[in-house]
Structures are given as structure tokens and as C-alpha cells.
Image (cartoon, rainbow, N blue to C red; front, side, top):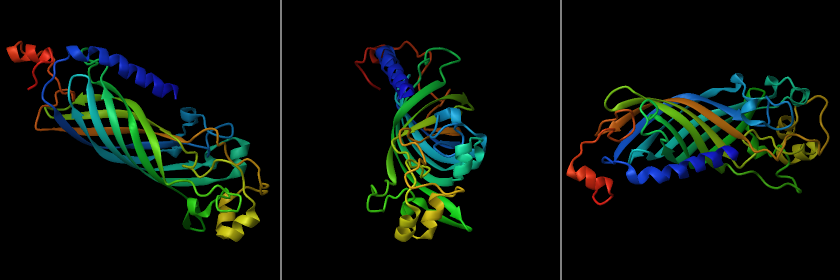
Length: 299
């Protein structure tokens, strides 16, 4: 949350300079990208029950990510973007050296689709050499489906209710659709008049602890097997010996998160990209430009 507040503060401070900016006509950049995603959840990594965010990073949990989007360049410092992401997040207690995780012996793969609306800000738009650096934040939605493998078959864990969601005292299944807060930073390298190569590191704050299907406590295995079948009981507890009903399985106080590092290729439709930021560094001192700077005339 502190990272998000810092991003918002920088965005607000940047608005003080917008009145002095010189605008060109709006242009649209389209992009596609490939990269890697990494889950920060309850499975693997951490040396305690739960997740410590980026400190839990394990390169073995990386998985390919890709997507496409568009950016609407409206001026020197600010842009509005839309973004889609397709990836698979993975978690595995086998990646951890901590006894609790190793004995718990759970693993998951979660197919995820995300769509976002973003506000992009270039804090150094007037500084040569740094004008291509940007930060961003926004809001989006994600669809996710955790699965686990048993005897060469993959099972949808939400439908099994591995923490007793479907039992008489359960809270019901968790949602497949959730709100996500994307934020991050990047740098644009000019390739040509209308093209840019972009390095982007994005983080995702979520409001669910079930991206990896692990959050609270173990359910009664006998009741779980009766309600949802023996597969549910096996996939809920793969430790030896089995845990007791009510023993901790995860940490519901810390929500799951994930991050994505990507390389993007951007093409500006019907205009010049320059450095990927739609503005004139040294606009001609024409009458229309001066009037435009006063906010009295728009091209």
C-alpha cells in the first residue's frame, strides 16, 4: 500500500506543471509484449506462513506472460493506457527450504487474464536523457482459475473447496473475478520515427488470498471427501502425516500479489513516436504555439 501511495503522490505533484506544457495533437500507440510473471503467494518462498512480497521472489516460479494494449498520448507528461495480460502463475512448496512449506507439499498453477485502465506519467519529460522514463498506476480486473495435478489430471481447486468452502460451516466459494491495482515503471527506447522498445516492470496489488488456493486452515478431510469427492481431500492436504481440522494452511492476513517484467514493442499510429512520448521538445515559436501554451487555443 505504501508503494501505491507514493505513486499517487508523484502523480499529484506532476499536475502542477501541466499548465506550462506544449501539446501536440493526440496520437495513439499500440503495443504487444512478452515477459515473465511471478506469484507472491502462500506457496513456497517465504520463511514464514504467508508471503513477504518481492522478498519471496524465486526465479523457478517465473512463467511466460504476454499481452497487448494501447496508449493515448495527449501531452508532454501524461498518457492514458489500456492493457491486457495473459499469463499462468505458479507456486510450489518444493521451492522452499522452510520446514512448514516442505511438509505441506502443495503446488498450484493459476491461469489468469487481466484487463486494466492506466494513467502514465513522465516525471522527467523536460529532462534530456530521462524523458523516456515513466511511472504508472490504475485499476483493472482479473479472472483467475487455480488448478492442481493429481494422477495426471488437473483439477479446478475452486470447485473442490479445499478449505471447506462448500461444507455446512463454510463461507462459500471464492470469486473468480477480482479487482486488481496495477502500478509500475518503465523506460522507452526509440527505434524509429514511429516505433519504440519498452522495458516495463509492473506490480499487482490484489484483494484476494486465493490466487494459489491457500489462505486459512485445513478442513475436515472426511467431510470434504463426502461433500466433494476423495480428490478434494487429497488435494487439500498432501502432507505426511495429515494435518488436523483447523490447523493453519495459509495466512489470510496477507493477500496474494504478483508482478510482471515485460519487453514491449510499440507503434504510433499516424504520427511520429520520437522517444515514444508525444510532444515537441523545441516547438516553433509561432503565434498558434504561443496561444496554445496559454490554453486559449487547441489545434
